[in-house]
Image (cartoon, rainbow, N blue to C red; front, side, top):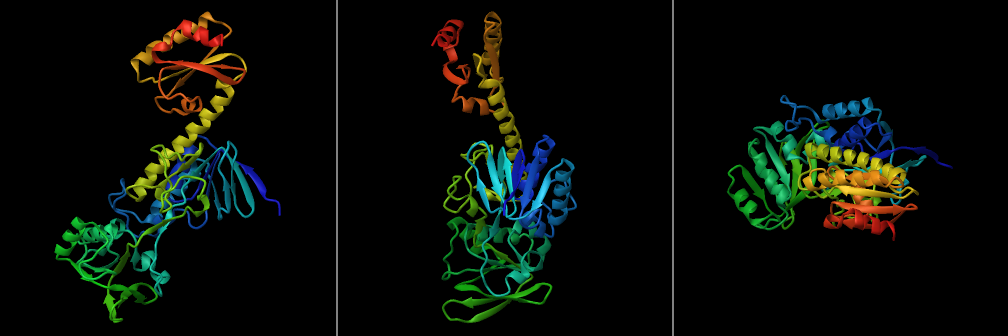
Length: 408
């Protein structure tokens, strides 16, 4: 069956907080933008009952309510949505392709915002109590909702112990299930020492999750199995927090973009991957903190960077790489010396009527400079017949040297 072909400026893969924010920025820039989400628009944030740390909502908000606002704002700016699964991508080259079962979407830029998923224990009934029914993966999100309650933390790595200590600020008791012998944890020694001294923390050593138990509506207890004795201990809890790792949804992009061993996508501060025109944002990135607030920041940068990439690509083809002779003055508007030389370059153009001057400011974006392999400013690049002939930079820039370059 032939697939329907559609063309967009930007395709965002993933409709969580990062993807929605990127879509808002691209849509507002009047780019034809598509967001593809395979499950629920809003991503994992929609499963958070109480979100009290997102700025601008002093009374708090539900994750679902907040993501609905994001969704409405994206649609306001003309962003289109497809609720389907991405089957394949072709990211190299100027024409990028995102394939679903029925469609083939061609675009100029792609933003990878596929997020991730917490690693699960695999114990019986786990799926039954995920998120709003008693199993949580975010202490920062759900700590306040567990004020004066008893909670269980699964895991003993840095995240588990640090989040467990954060929970003690709210919960009446924090019980920690540790796989190892007494005194052995996977976290750093400082966190371990502080946790062991915390009067609100209780440790159950050599235990793993045997079963999640409760009614139809909510988790009631977690059955832990002692790995040495085989004993099953039923632990009554209000909420169970699982911190045994996180799995980014990046299988589709393996071998295409650079990743860590754990599968997180590597980007620079502009959310750029190693492939021009391909960006990543949100939980899918290698980063320090994964929260809605940081996902929004990533998405804003990725959307802005995608808009700049497309604009610079069009400028590069239509203005920079023309057939008629031209010089490109690459400069930084924040540099007084570069600004002063700009006037001299404009005078140089006026004296040579057969030459066109193109000005490329790297202050906000260095895309044109990168395409011309210019790493320092100021720099003058001479182009003839659509090809770069040569360049002169810094203190070598003068009419005589530019003229010599043109005679090459």
